[in-house]
Image (cartoon, rainbow, N blue to C red):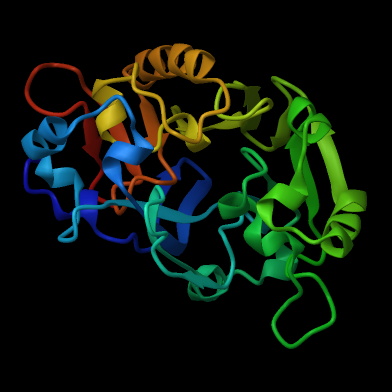
Length: 290
C-alpha cells in the first residue's frame, strides 16, 4: 500500500459486479491538485510523511469521469465528467493542469452508446461532474445523452449557479427542462437510492447501489483524496460547509467500514473502488483489485 501506484496515477476503466448489476468507472480525465491548497489543514510535513498520494510533480491526482450502472439492457450514469478541456496550471491557484474529454471513448469501449443511457444522476452541480451533460454530441446537433433525464437533489437544484461553473445561459436554458429533482431515499434505478448529504454543496448527494448481497456507496465529493479516510476532520478547499462536510465524512467512513460495503471515490486517482479497514495495518482506504 505504501508504494501503490494506483494512488497517484490517472484512472483507467474499472468495473465491479454486485450480483446482476455491473458498475464501471468511466474516466474522463484528471485534475492535478496542490495538496496543501486542496486540504488546508495539512502541512508540508503531512505530505512528506505520505508521499504515496502524490505524483512525480508533487500533486494529488484527482480522477474525473462518471459511474456507469448497468442492469440488463438498462443504464444509468452517475456524474458526467468535465468534458473536452485542457487547462494549464493556475499560477498560485489550487489546481495544476486539468484535462478531460475521454468519457465518450470509455463508454464506447464498454459497448454503451450514450444515447442508450436513460438517466444521468448528479452528485452535485460542479463543472467536473456535469461537463458532458450540457454539450452536443460530437459532430451532431443533439445532446450527448439524447434520451436521458437529469436527476438532481432538490436542494442542489434550488441553489444552483450554473454560470459560476462555466455553463452559458444558452446551455443552461437547454439543460433545465430535462432536470427532474429527486429526494432523500428515493429509488432512481433498480437498486440505486439517493442520500442527500449536503456539506460539499448545499444539496450534495451520494448514491447507494445494492445487489448480490453487497452495497456500494458512490460518495461523490464527500471525500476528495484517500488520505481523508484516515482524517475525516480535514475538509477540502472546495467544501461549501466545511463543518457539515466533516460531520458527514465521519459518518460515511463508519458506514464504509461495515461488512459487504464498497466505496467509490470519483476523485481517488486509479483507486476509485475500495474498502475501509481501520485496523492499524496501514492506510484505511484499501483499493480493490479490479
